[in-house]
Structures are given as C-alpha cells and as structure tokens.
Length: 173
Image (cartoon, rainbow, N blue to C red; front, side, top):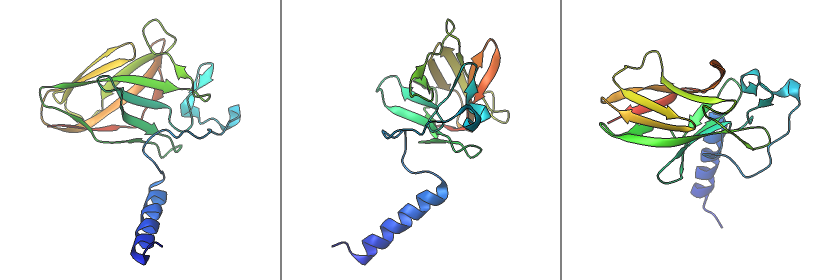
C-alpha cells in the first residue's frame, strides 16, 4: 500500500503537469482525435493538408535517432518539449526535421518537395550565437559564441512561410 507521502507527491506531480498544460515529453501512441476542416487551427493548415494538432514537428538527432525536441501544440499556448536545445561552443549538432500531418503521415520536406524547411534565429538573438545550415529535411546548428537565444523552425512553400514554430530556447556553452 502506498504511503501518504507517496500519494501526495504523485498528486502534486499530476497537478503540476496539468497546470503546465501538458503531460509527457513527446508524441503519444494513442489515437489522435480526427478534426473537421473547421476545427483545424489556422496555423496548422497547409495547402492541401494540415499538420498534426498535437505534435506537428519534431527534431530527431541524426547521430542517435533520438527525438531531441518536439512541438507540443495547445492552440495559442504551443511550446517545445525537451528544451533548452544545448549546443557545444565551437561544435555542432545535426537533426532531421519531421513534419507530421493529421493522419500521422510524414510530410516530405526538401528543395524538390512541396514544402521546404527553414531554421533561423529570433530577432533578439545575436547573429554570432549560432550558424544554421539546412539541406532538405536536415539541419545542422553550429555553436559560435557562448550565450542564449531563440531559434524558429519554418515550413515554407514557394518562398512563403506556411508554418512557424514556437521559439526554441537555445544555449551555447
């Protein structure tokens, strides 16, 4: 039988997660509710399809295959799980960007695809903090100077932004 302290600790943890607006640290295996066109958040609509309403974009570490960051979508309260993105000073990390549609199918990203990937610094992030290189669905981020800033993932179509991620808190040390 669990102790009173254990029950209280568990209840406090569950309440904290609930107040934070999310539970878990990545995409769940359960079924995602289906949506009608009217229920799709405008920021998730792409031309001819729509991104997943729970976990639309993730960054997967190329070297290990581990999920490094995942966008958790709560409508206007969206955020990345597993932040901050930590980069070594004078080093780099490479990721594969995965965009997922409402049916949980991967949306191809690349120069020869309908949608392209772009990753860039936030307006207040020093241009010296990181360099970013994108090739199709692969992004390599180089830590150039110690500090903190923000990165954004964008999905583009014909040069127009069709999706903007929430900011990724980024630390170079």
